Image (tube, rainbow, N blue to C red):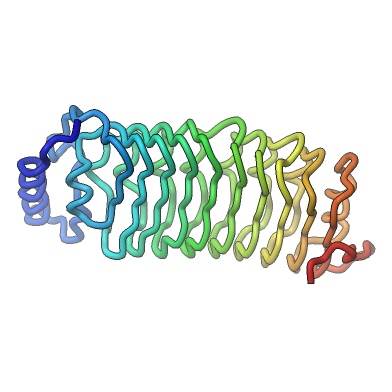
Length: 283
């Protein structure tokens, strides 16, 4: 049952004002235990959108959102005050202009559907998601231009039920935070990650890929050995426009697949003794 948040909101506002007076000029809605969280509100029944600080206040002390949780904000600087939240029954989608981290989601353990972290202009890390160990859907991490790593996802283990897409994360240096993932039930797309050098963090993935493989436009990617455990995939194999990835490495990954008869596009990578395969290129 949803409880009236007025008194709690007022208490939090007073706490935030005192925090600011005590030398917290940034005042990133520092709720947490200092705000007197009791985690007694139980389940928020249905979907919930966090677009501003008021929406954060109204979700304080809830341990679960039964539906989708969409965090979409142009001015929210933090999520502190949501430390009671443990479960999201549907998807978790995060898009923010100002947040540098996801503090406030530190006790989240389960997302029932997709995890989408997209278009966060200032986000540096996912460390607040370190307790997330259960995910029911796919992962899309895209257009996070300052994101450095995926270490906050290191508690995820086993199969991903759907695609794994990592694209246009310009400063993403490694994918080590995904080392617990053992299989992907859809497409694997790794594209336009300018600082990504290797895929070693995906070395636990083995067997069949549930969709297409697309590794494209990664400026300094120099090997794909982290995917050596793949044995087959569906429909389309594309490794192109990775200027420091040897063409022979791309071809070796293809040749390691058993019984693959789909379209292939290998081109625009580092030239070596192996020839491109362009018969399956889409344009």
